[in-house]
Length: 129
Image 1 (cartoon, rainbow, N blue to C red):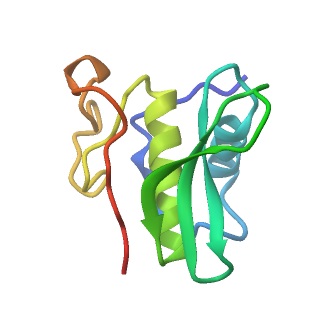
Image 2 (image 1 turned 135 degrees about the vertical axis):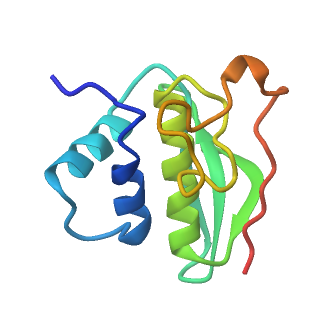
């Protein structure tokens, strides 16, 4: 069974360089792990304007209704996908959020701020181009 390894920053860099298409077996396995159903809320993207604008949202597993939109929008699909990847990585690592320039500036042993040290809620981070 695959275990998440938060020191594998090479996988984050690989995804950032190429969010779509063929990935290495390790990255594909990580993406499958990130996308597997759990009982925890997870981040998704809503298309506000096809090919032009995306909004970050949170899905509640098993809850009726649409995802809950957040106040985070993107005009670039790659930036939107990267933010979802970052948030899913943080969730797997048991964190609230990663530092803004992660993984480019990161200590492989601690590429983030621990959840206990982060002040409440989801960080607002507009990524409009």
